[in-house]
Image (cartoon, rainbow, N blue to C red; front, top):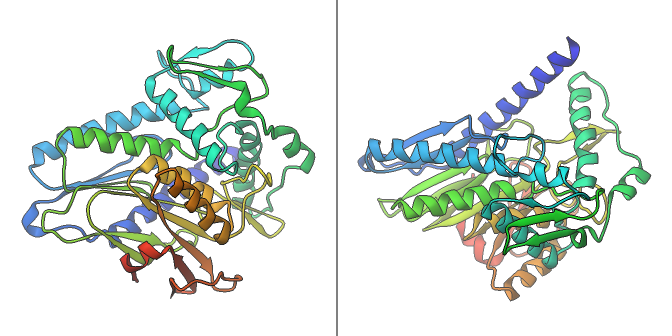
Amino acid sequence: MKENNNHIRSWIALALCFLLLIAAFYFALTNRSASSGTHQQTLTDVGFDTFVTYSQGGSEAEFNENIAFIRERFLYYNQLFDRYQDYDSVNNLKTINDAAGDHGVIVDDSLIDCLRTARTFTSYSPHFDASQGTLLEVWHEYREKGIAQNEAGEDGELPDERTLQEAYNPQSWDAIEIDEQNNEVTITDPDVSIDLGGIAKGYAVEQVKRELEERGVNGAILNAGGNVVTIGSKSDGSAWRVGVQMPADLSDSTLAVLELNGSHAIVTSGDYQRYYEADGERYAHIIDPLTLYPPRYCRAVTVVCDDSTMADCISTTLFTLSYEDGLQYLDVLEEQGIHAQALWVFDESEDIPQSEHTFTSQGYTIITTEALYEAVQIS
């Protein structure tokens, strides 16, 4: 009974966290116009352990059709990228991992595309590595147990160094064969597994955005638990207003608002969701594969670019890097033709990097890249 109660409390806490996240974005996304007939709905049954909020102008009939389409597509991508559950007639990420060291698996084009993109981003920085599923699974088990222990008033536990070192394989991608011609993925090493947690939701959001554009959607905004995309321009010509959440437990406040025109992808990675505490320290869900541990450079990083898949990868990577190394990483991306801007959030008590593009808000310091500075409005 105690285990069931802990499980229920975990789901209640998760639901409350995402409800408050949506409330924070709803507060900041003051994008409605009385004359535009804007419709908005939040979907709670679309997978990815998140809620999806969608807002669009136009007729109610068109909006309802798009809502049904969004639900269907998110459920599809959730099944595809799920590494814990099997689904009838679906070869997904779990199917691939289960077949490691045994045989290849024929998969959907989208899974091939996502894996190829994940591998490419590892070539930009080894701090982003979807081939380290074995290492991430160690932390996942300790985090889930630690969350339950914290809820019971107990301290969480940490995996020992030897376990982490044995789980990490710097050559894991060499054991993952992606046959694009035959849509087949083969993991040749039984000790290697794939985890797409740093890219999957961003990929799903990007694909749904593109599919909505193909359906003729313009002047809409979609928020999948903090992965936000704006589609086209608002009907009244004003800027989209996207909130930057305060990195505090269950906070419904925003530190700042980004005012953006046109289509953008905005993704945040931080330490204030899906974490647990052990030995008086907070351990986030994002793991740096090179150190084997969650990073501690900042509280959150928000990335703005034109592609949600890339924004997800970039924000995850930047969270594992110091501010200075992050700027160098953005330069590497620029050389690859990937244009991204970033916003870092630090506790004021931390050793704050020096920058001309700095704000303070509600006990936090915000630093942005130069091109994003003018878009920031402090709450």
